[in-house]
Image 1: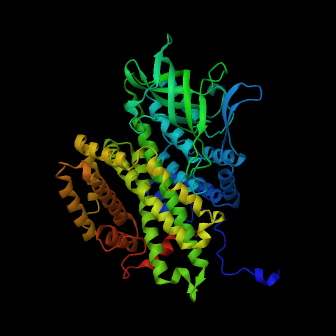
Image 2 (image 1 turned 30 degrees about the vertical axis):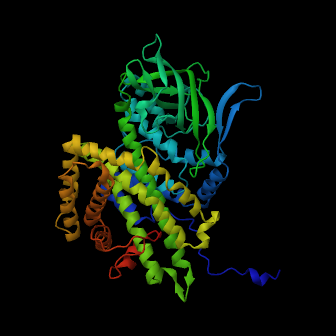
Image 3 (image 1 turned 180 degrees about the vertical axis):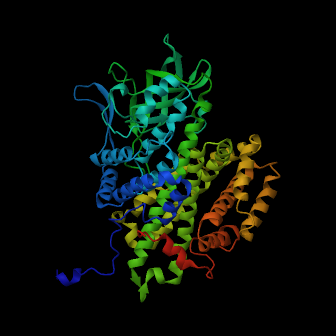
Length: 545
């Protein structure tokens, strides 16, 4: 075949060799906004290093390898001994090790720790999302473990360590450890109170043996797991170590690994317990209250993880349109493509700003901020995770056929996109959780209204949306059937208030006109044409400034 037929032109270069953090104006502004001045230099240095790693060709290769070579289950060794190990491609361990070293499991006692970690999680998830699962659970387990000071003293230093050790050994012999969790069962799913796994007390204080199963056990290669089981006093939380202190393997029979739509680099398993040794965490019968802070922390990671997928999808779309020409001009200059890109950029910016605001509330730790989180986290989890899939789909379409092939990385983003909406309670669960907070915790609603009220008077469309929301909140009779609509409105009002306060005028104007003012269609790319869309797109372009 003649070589002239293979001349390649009008292709966008790969989006590699850039600083994922530094090229994200929205995220860098959020870090500067929420961190004290004395922490900024150190935080910027760490996030810049992580951002350059995330945008490197090496990280892109690791992500591709980890997904092309998914984990494999080895139930027995060559001699027939039960070992129940999960083998991962070396790229998985490199990704996970880099994340742990960067402190992505260390936030709770670190100054500005939640903002720094959330920013890092948002950056590094763009390299590969699957390994974020063990990072999230390890981070989130800390408040649950703190209900038992002795257990926390033993495990917390390992969970917050910046050392990654992949081998299975007694936790006391390791410099760092990871935790997974196993809550759901076949018959109950999200309704964990219907769990049937039994916990029988032993003579040792807080020691039990488990018998039962878990339908979903996340990250089964971890050093330990938080699980729920029925003790004599009711549903209780337990810590299940993978390896016992004497070096023997705990009974932890992995039946199979799930064959999932996405998240393929990460292992999710069905496991059986038969005389499995565990330690009680918290009081008997207090299983759900014991894990509630863990659930909230993982839900925030669902929001942050979705924001990361959205940002990477938008970055790829804007980058492609900047270099690709069609119909006599560069795509990014075409009015209709500009409208699509600006619409996507608005959604991405609103998600990032909201995720970072929630992280800052964790760092504040005040009663008011804790009340705000109680209602804002499930609200954000409901809305941001649901917006992720349609956004990634539209961003993929911006690349045309190039985006539909695996080499572009966009299909992997699309397969990953629905996960965060399902994990830690799907949409209905989040909406009902918001309703419970509205009905039982007046401080939570007051904190939410105070937050959105800080932007009153700045935009008439936001003011009208707040007024309409107050009218709807005044009547909670028969609210369950309209809970999704209410929570969606709450999320949009919250995002609008944050953008009005902190985003450039062109961004806030476009968001309020479309999401709150109703001047918007049913698909992305239907913003009012009179807005300053070019500035919105330019703000989203992945270029270090």
